Image 1 (cartoon, one colour):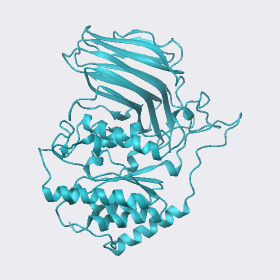
Image 2 (cartoon, one colour):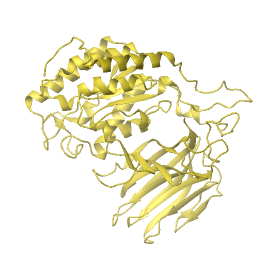
Image 3 (cartoon, one colour):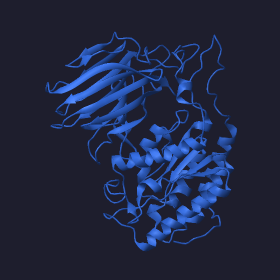
Image 4 (cartoon, helix red, strand yellow):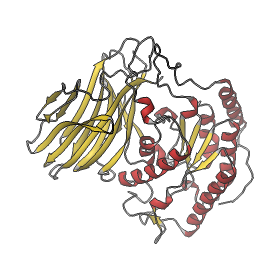
Length: 443
């Protein structure tokens, strides 16, 4: 690898033109308002400001985060650091699939020539980037390309968040030369961030690296390069904690006001669900679930063995009511579900993007996978779930799960679901606690 501190010119006139066009577009757009000024007559909405929208660049470590499964189904995967990062960061910041520009197998040339113009034109205020592992040992001018990239972000008013090149493990170990390249890149990112007020460097390496071997901690990678679910959670949480220390914003409580109800005239981006804070005990149970359920909620388990216990209850943590499901007995591969549904509100219709989100506290043994889904039948967007592949699901996690769905033609009902697939033949224990249920229009 060639180490250079000089900026390099982009390779084509077309790319230069695209950068100029992106800058012109960015300069012409004023920041979105978070909502109308709060008053007794006008409710505050939750539109996301440009400054709080995040564009994500990189390679497969981020590209792995999101899959379009079919025409009607898409979702975030638990085996990418980015999925956990977006769950743990301050809720005033937003990462949507439309702003995920990372592409598998790519390096810093693609970053400069393709992902950079996209980022500039995206109307996002923050750029999070992890890239470089595919360039190691190939003689690519990584530092020159990164200089071009971070200079352009600064010149276009986009805050830069740089993430490190990660270690591999024994299944696909880095050579000594490749490891030296990785250390050079990470040190350069650190040093640049020290002197560039537009740039922040987040590491995560202290919790991800086994310093006795120089490899990733055993169990954090599934193939020597890509993270398992547990490795992704550890890294995503560490990065998010550092991000939150730098990028302050309204806390979760700022969005927890009871007046955030949807209204077609005064609050068209408000929450459509009738009972976001799980109040009351007038909800429903089905398919063998037992216990107490919040008003307008349904708690049920899929048909299965009676040895799979799914008990619902209510719990107030601090001042916030939570709907709780306690798992017990022996797993048989079936699912425990909490959900709330409502008719599609007036003013919402085909083509609108809706975001469903829930605060989760999960501490359980015996879960194969876990997800939150937002439905506008037949379409659904997931955060998590889908498969037990790529390692065990972490047994103790928290954060805000969220997913988007585009309303299809003919949809009449929207629904927000929290579900856990339990392992077959495994002794179950623990709880799923959910609070602050929202479905809001984000476009």
